[in-house]
Image 1 (tube, rainbow, N blue to C red):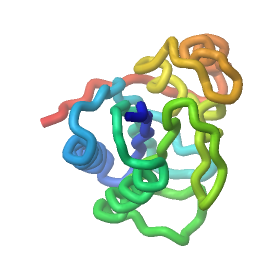
Image 2: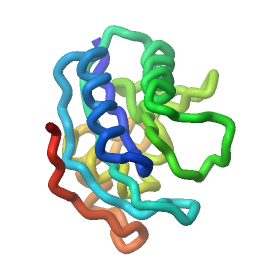
Image 3: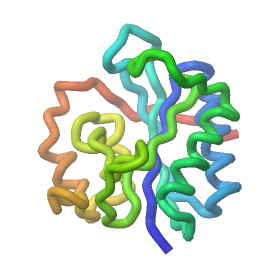
Amino acid sequence: MARIYISIGSNIDRENRVRAAVRALREQYGDLAVSSVYESEAVGFAGDPFLNLVVGCDTEQTVFEVHARLRAIEEANGRVRGGERFSARTLDLDLLTYDALVLDEQGVQIPRDEITKNAFVLWPLAELAPMTPHPLSGQRYGALWAAYDKSRQPLHPIPFCWD
C-alpha cells in the first residue's frame, strides 16, 4: 500500500470542479485526507484565480495506474489537452508523491517539481503532511513551507462549502 498526495486545481467553474474531483477521488480511493482550500492567482498567464488543495490517500495501484486514473478524472471534467501549458483549467490533478518514490519516465515525474516551486502546492501539502520528508531533499514539508518566500505567490485559505 502506497501513500499518495494529489494536488487539485481549477479556475473554470472552480467550486463545482473541485467538488467533483474530491467526489471522484473518494470513489476511487476511499477515505481522503483533505487540506484547506486556497485561492491563488494564475501562474504563468493572465487569468481568473484558481482554487487549490491537496488530498492524501492510500492505494494499491501502481504509480502509472494512478496517473492514468487522474487523467481520466480530468477529462471527465472537461479538461482539454494540447493547449498552452500555462492556461485556464477546468481541472488539474497532479500526483505529487507516491511514498518516497523518485521517478521521471513515461510522462510521470515523482515527486513533482511544483512541490517546492509553488505555494499553492506546498502549503496544502505541508498542512496534511508536515513531518513527511521530501523524497529528494529529505526536508520535511512543514520545514519547506516555513522557509518558503511567501511574498513570491499570494495565497490565502478560503471557506469552502462541500455540499
